[in-house]
Length: 376
Image 1 (cartoon, one colour):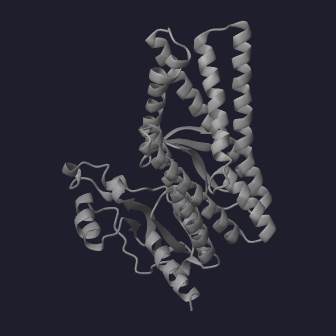
Image 2 (spheres, rainbow, N blue to C red):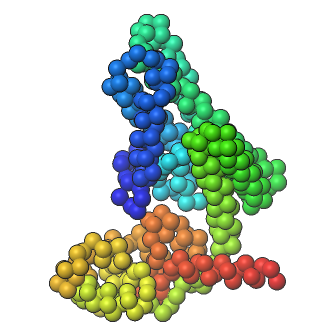
């Protein structure tokens, strides 16, 4: 488990995670289908049947969303674009790329793959519906297949909206990128369209509440705010990457390195380092050699009563090769590593010697300066 995401599997080498919000949406879908949708369409069945239909439909919807995201990911991997996994959350899912596609063709192919997958799934469940209706007309099966066909076509309808970062927005960005030859401008326009559609959803959500359709209205408002925020964040991330491009780690890192010994107690680590330096993590050094990293998250794994008797060496992360960067490396790569492994600080080594630390706040300060200088 990582924060609010729970890793449940690995497919094609891709970590599959679900956000804890999906537990809420799974229960909500199962409940609404079992209480309202299926009894309305197929009256007269036992309550347990409706609940089984609701739960099975929610599970198959989960699988449909996963197949949609795996379709994106297949081409992400084919184009050798680094990604840290797939996360399913309350409004769908996301294939988490740590770099942008290299050209408009890659962007278009990655985006269209998910829509094609949902299209195929929609017709697959529609085919099962008609096949069942002819040869084995059981209401429970008919209801599940009909719902899944409809919901996959609805997903296509929503995702095809030309607002970034929806699939339709990515297709729009790919076309604008091809026409204008400028990724930033294409992303800016597609993100603005995404924000516009988010605002439209919020408007119709408020309208729905005004006319008494409270539940649908709340959902539209939530989705609208989600789309607006995702569009804004996607553009900001691209700008950050562009501003940091070509800047070496040595220009961003802090050389005033505060390290700790693996032999001190967790109690001393907290009192003498975390409370004095206010960092969220420290490199662990023994005899001039980096041997690990220790963070607040590592400390939280130990009960307060055992702080005095537990040494840093017992809780530190020894698997740090993947986190090490050199002063000459591009700062963008360091930022990608932070994003991939969800850490806030990376050790900087030059010929095996610890020469600096690069943290997220270093990137923020660098970006602030770059933005101010660009205004001059």
